[in-house]
Image (cartoon, rainbow, N blue to C red; front, side):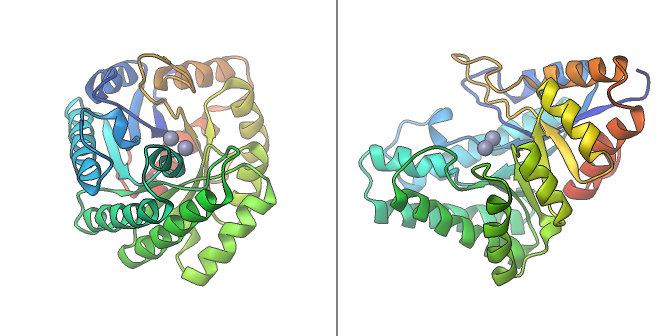
Length: 287
Ligand SMILES: [Zn+2]
Ligand SMILES: [Zn+2]
C-alpha cells in the first residue's frame, strides 16, 4: 500500500548478530520508519569481563553505538537500556550473590537513568519481573530494581518498557499500585510483549502496550483495540543461533500488509498503530 509506513515498538540488535545497521536497512526496505532499540543483556555484546558494573557500562556503550548505526541508515530510533529480569537469574547462576545482584542492578539502573536525563538514552527498558518459573527471591530482586526504575523515570520524565508475566488484570493491578505510590504518569509506561488480555486491561487503564507481531495476535488486537494505545513489536533478539525467534522486524510488516489485503485491518488502524501512537509515546516527529 502506498503511503503506509511501519514501526517496531520494541526490538533488539546485537553486534554478534546481524547488527543494527543491517537490521535497519532490511526494515526500511520493507517500509519501516521507526524502531525502539532496546538493550539486550550484556552477554550479547563483545565483552569478556566478569559480571561487574564495568561489564554493563561496556555493554551500554556498544548498545549506544548500535543505536547510532541504525540512525545512520535513516531509520528513526528510540534508544533504551535497562536491566532485564532474566539478568537476575543469569548473574546469580554465574556466581553472584543475590545481594550483589540487587546492588549491581540498582547501580545499572541509576547509570541508565542518568544517561536518559542527559538525553543520551531515550528511555529505560527492559525492567520488570520474570515471566517464567524462578526462585521467589529473584522475583523480589527484579521487582526492587523495577521500583527504583519507576522512581528514576518519574524524576527524569523517561519512558519505560516493562517486561512482565502475562497474568491478566493481576499483572496490571500490581503495577498500578506501584505507579500510584511512585506517582509516575501512566503515559510514560509501556507493557511490552503484552497478551491481548493484559493489553486490553492496561490500555483501558491509561497505559501503553505492545503486541507481538504474530498474525493471529495482531488480527485480534486490531479487531478489539483499534484506536487505542497499542503498538506492534517484533522483540527480535538478533541471535544468529535463533533467527527470527520471536519475529523478524520485517516479518511484522509483511503480516500487517497481509491482514490489510485480507480486509482484517484498515489503513486508518495501521496508521494509528504505526505512526500516531509512536509519535505520542516516543515523543518524536511524524515521518
Ligand atoms: Zn521482554
Ligand atoms: Zn525484548
